[in-house]
Amino acid sequence: MTVNTELLRRKIEDSGMTITSFSAAIEMDPSTFYRKIDSGGCKFTIGQMHKAVAVLKLKKAEAVQIFLGENSQKCEN
Image 1 (tube, helix red, strand yellow):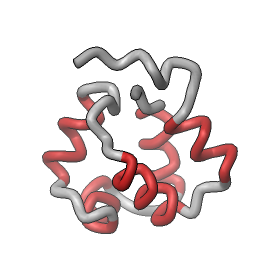
Image 2 (tube, rainbow, N blue to C red; image 1 turned 90 degrees about the vertical axis):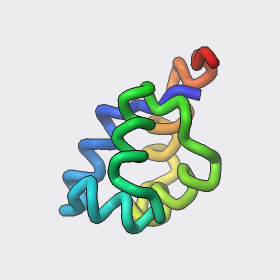
Image 3 (tube, rainbow, N blue to C red; image 1 turned 135 degrees about the vertical axis):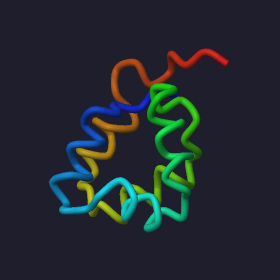
Image 4 (tube, rainbow, N blue to C red; image 1 turned 60 degrees about the horizontal axis):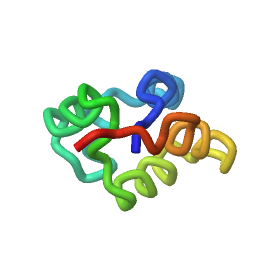
């Protein structure tokens, strides 16, 4: 499932967090976060997505836009 990584980065920035602080908040090493972003977000687990939604205090529509957008089913393994 692809993630709207551009919008995710924007929401992290808008929240006043850095990638490092956000990664720590979702219990992920920053280098792992960057790898997941570089893969188009295909490697995020459902649990990691739920943590991101909680940490960023996303509204349902925002979460859907980031994690369940138009191309969310187009990841290749």
